[in-house]
Amino acid sequence: MATAAAEKQAAATHVDVLIVGAGISGIGSAYHLQEQCPGKSYAILEMKDTFGGTWETHKYPGVRSDSDLYTFGYRFKPWVGTPIASAQAILDYMGEVIEENGIDKHIHYGHRITRAAWDSKTNLWTIEATRKSDGANVVFTANFLWMCQGYYDHEKPYMPDWPGKDSYKGLLIHAQLWDPKIDYKGKKVLVIGSGATAATVIPEFAKDAAHVTMLQRSPTYFFCSENRNELADKLRAGGIDEPTIHRVVRAQIMHDQAVMTQRCIDEPDVVFEELKMLVRAFTGKEDFEFEPHFTPKYRPWQQRLAFCPEGDIFRAAVAGKLSVVTDELDTFTETGVRTKDGTEIEADIIVAATGFNLLMMGGIPFFVDGQPVDWHDTINYRGMMFTGVPNMVWVMGYFRASWTLRVDMLGDFVCNLLNHMDKKGVKRVEVALRDEDRDMTLGDWIETDNFNPSYLMRGLKQLPKRGDKPEWRHNQDYWAERDQIPATDLEGSEFLYDGVRAGTKVTEAA
Image 1 (cartoon, rainbow, N blue to C red):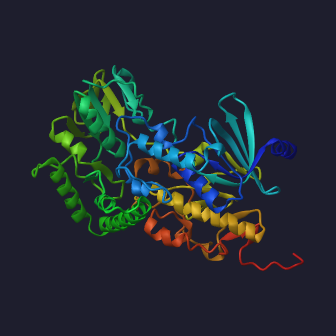
Image 2 (image 1 turned 30 degrees about the horizontal axis):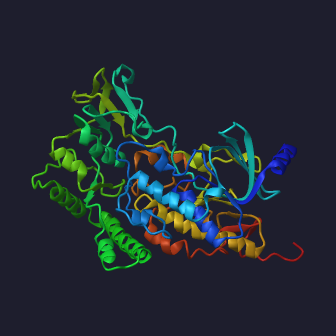
Image 3 (image 1 turned 90 degrees about the horizontal axis):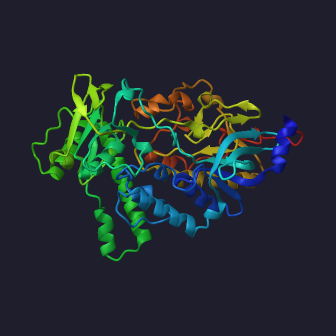
């Protein structure tokens, strides 16, 4: 086995840093690596035939961001469009980043990784992949692995095993697998689900479908707003340059989001009343009825707050284009579905907006010194590094704030770490529990009373464990981490360099 491993490494393409994924995380990470570690060679391996990640995967009608682009956009490239943008606008923006910074020559498209193995003797990752164009098996080696592939399965979405599915005579499709060629004009469309995807696709369906029905097990919170940023518009009118606008507007939005997040904890009932006021304002109906279809059973932001530009989903309901049924699905029928209370819903097309299947590390088999890695047996360090796994960082973004805020933050962290290792003259870094951490309580990745969407709850056993100290958890709190992570002491005792705990004095004889 050792000989085979040596042969693979000898035949491999070597880079200092290997980035996995050419989505929003991978492209941003590549930019930071080029800027902050210009001497490092790198490659990006991407399973798809093009860049974009989630924005390339989803093609359902109206697909758009549910985070504002002033914070979802990178800090280094100003966003100049509407705050909520279409998938195509986001892809265009990413394409500009790639072209402007020469990132394209580093991307290897159509490469599906089949194995990732760390060898402590050589301090190298060996990455095996299958190249789509010719089916060849190719090998890369890297000193450092930067995992930017996201957190869900791009090929197999979550579809419940509903009774009677085979009896349905119409078209049943998951939103993630939507084919843009599907014609829904004049059709009766049923959308199962009430989260961000449903909030996006329903107003678009409502424009041309005969009628749309949303079937939900439980209601979701919606935040209605104009799709514009008043501060950005005022600054532009005043002739302020776009980089300054981008920086100032980002800061204002992040401040407002921090206030909102805290208020959802401190005064959830007041926040809900304000959300209702926005719905009434955009629909023009002071008597808009929220019971039972728009009154969630959890507090705001305990699950993702669905953004609703211009109140579009509520305006579709007021216009008679949308009906809402709140109940559990009992069975499919030949013409649609029947709910637990006996309600029959007829539909020509049924769209499952039922969410993702969480997929840790893209489902890639990982090995450290010949032993398989079970991620649930590891303990996460600030949601990006894992005990027992050297020279690797995983980008997991935020759910309450824009994902990309953490891409930029971890870009700084990784580059600082790589430069620190070079300065120390070491080849390996990993994290390990300190003496004071040995008896701390361990739990699942995130507390269910903090954030509990269904896909995360279904996949918790795939994810690493968390501790009860700030260093050993991903708290989903950008406003705390923006101070904590940049201030990380890279010589803290949780770091091991070449197997030696930071801060440990090594004698000359040793």
